[in-house]
Amino acid sequence: RTVLIILDLIMTVMDAFEFRNEQYKDPELAKITTVLISADSHIERSAKALGISEYIKKPLEIPELLSVLKKYCL
Image 1 (tube, rainbow, N blue to C red):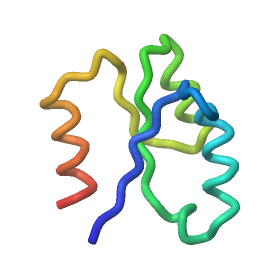
Image 2 (cartoon, rainbow, N blue to C red):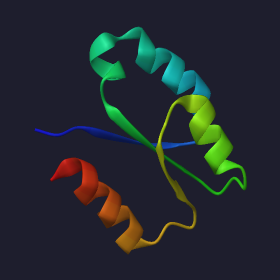
Image 3 (cartoon, rainbow, N blue to C red):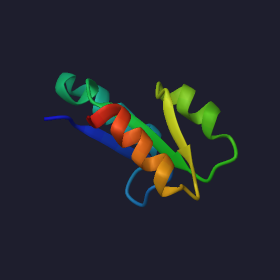
Image 4 (cartoon, rainbow, N blue to C red):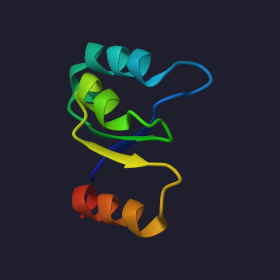
């Protein structure tokens, strides 16, 4: 079973930075590949700051999303 987290940079309860801090507290969760999505014009910089190598700029295109899912989940 493959697990992948698709994380939006800005969320209602916590932002991506808060989420990643919590994720890293649990060794099992820390191992999960995380993909960042955002409409932010600085998504590449944010992804790097979060330690995320894969990101998708919104509005995301379905083929791009499927490509990322294939890359990590198949």
